[in-house]
Amino acid sequence: MGFLHPHGRHGPRHGGPRLSPRARPVASPGRDLALTYRGLDQAHLKGARALVRVDFNLPMNDGQVADDTRLRAALPTIERLRAGGAKIILLSHFDRPKGRPNPAMSLAPVAPALAVLMGRPVSFVSDCIGEAADAAVERLAPGDVLLMENVRFHPGEEADDPTFIQALARNGDLYVNDAFSTAHRAHASTAGLAHKLPAFAGEAMRRELDALEAALGSPMHPVLGVVGGSKVSTKLDLLCNLTRKLDALAIGGGMANTFLFANGVDVADSYCEKDLADTAREIMASAKAGGCELLLPLDVVVAERLEAGAPATTRPLDSIKPGERILDAGPRTVARLMNAMDKARTLIWNGPLGVFEVPPFDHATNAAARHAGALAKSGKLIAVAGGGDTVSALNQAGAADDFTFVSTAGGAFLEWMEGKTLPGVAALQH
Ligand code: 3PG
Ligand code: MG
Image 1: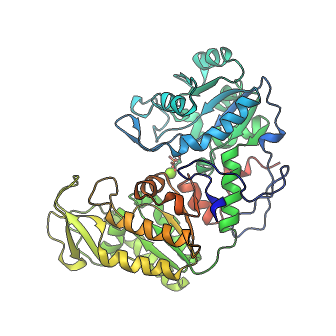
Image 2: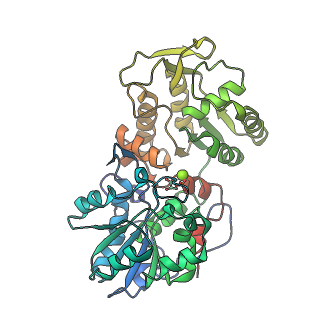
């Protein structure tokens, strides 16, 4: 199973599932529709200006790249374009600046981090369209790499606006999409450009599509899901869909608090979206109706402050005290999750179980990740994970390399799991 590690700590491996190098059929779970797309082997690269959509929406900490997985994922495409003599122009979003320039969401700190990884200079330009962008592209020689500023500083990006697409396209002879993790967005740089310029799937995109199809196209049951993290409101819809597909679903992280609250638990000062209690109840009902066993926390780790080394206490659900916040899953919860992993054949994991960035609230995530990794390593479980935070958490636990496949994608990963059409993948179809 080692071949399904395209984004493991040691970088891409070769020898993955091989399809025809030309038209690659892509079938996503639950759909018959076969997509075909062109790889870089079919692109004329010499001297061409390649607009490359990457996903450098990286976990950052105080202006420093906290996890460079997505940078490393882009290297094979950049190297291939360089070797072919293309001028490489990297486009990405970072965070959600809502169509306005925002210095706190600049991609500027990413250029030096990429340069260090590549061992070559990477230039940066403070806008992705307009005079500055045009001039920066004009200066490029074959093999040069230029990173442009956050495409979401312009409202035209998320609106997939034709004028904005045209302003981007004038600096490219061809378009390469290497960002599976943003393929669920129908934006100018993820979908619009693919209709405007000759479009190709980059190396990471190809590996991701090939590996997800091989691992998840027709999963072995029982399938267990782990969904955690704090993006509660954005994930409730996904949870609803997952409960129809999976045999069991464990819910952790901040979003679990909303479910506990909906079940009448006093979550005290915990992060909780109380207005989503009805939605949480609907999801629980839909899980029950669909035969998906929902694994909510049985016990929790609480503290009064979210601080490294803060005094932490394990509590049963009925004795959380005023002023306390739930920051991790408790040991009974983790033991039951490990047991569910032992019984499962396939595991799909998105999101940490607690505030894994702040010890000691990393215990549940670390323990569960290592258990899943060990099962996958011994061939007992197909363990697939996705999501920026998830990748960081698995790396921190030292479990990422043992997983069958670690995707760099978050929302796109889950939407793929639901069998939805991803606009960024569909736009590469020819
Ligand atoms: C991600 O990090 O999941 C992708 O970069 C997409 O980001 P978005 O959810 O802001 O579109
Ligand atoms: Mg997202």
